[in-house]
Length: 113
Image (cartoon, rainbow, N blue to C red):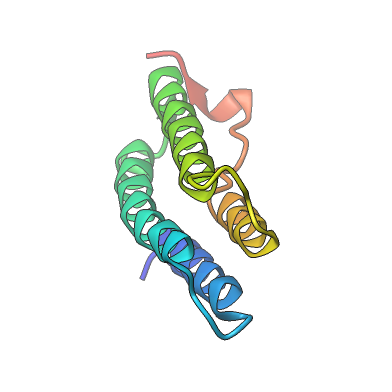
């Protein structure tokens, strides 16, 4: 298992643990879990492609940033479906955001090709 896979698996585990903390998983929490699983897999694929040549290009970095922004927007929309983000949902969002943190890429590792 690659380091990226380990990080994303740990993120998924944390999200589920936060959701189950009170002993009950609501429909919205389950929706967040389902979306998290799908989006983490997509993020994993994008990260593997970006890292495949050992250099993340400016275009790859932009694509990863756009994917993260889209994921964050969707997670927030799911949690806010009923116009209220509960403390449990907020904790899940925070666990998710920590889990999808993409390390900053220094300029020396950033290709402009």
